[in-house]
Length: 130
Image (cartoon, rainbow, N blue to C red; front, side):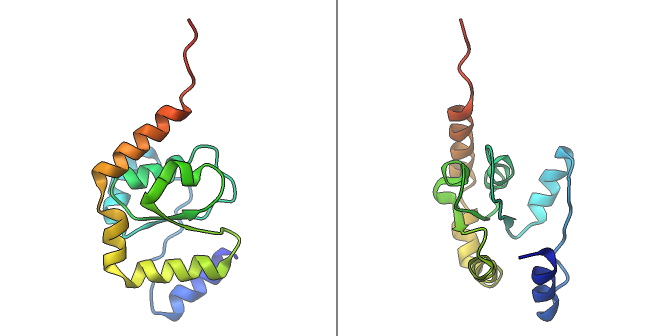
């Protein structure tokens, strides 16, 4: 699945609010998270999963891959899909667009999400040597 198939789908529905930003400086993230309805991160491989953890900490619903470290980092705070399944990804994407209660369910727990993020960060922190 490429950028073009997702882009075609949003334009067919009359939407023009899907943006491909590429690299975003850390200082710009809070404003983007405040403006986002949800955060999509269909990674095939992820070392720690910092971007979805940041979105969760900001109280943004997360749609991400059920691979690598992402389920451990995001816990029950995210919707998971097979990142190689265009059908699964587009179905979950459409559900998040259409269902405000689903977005609230997965994005409403700012405190829980922050706690999950910091607990996951602690688990990945290397122990200090004496």
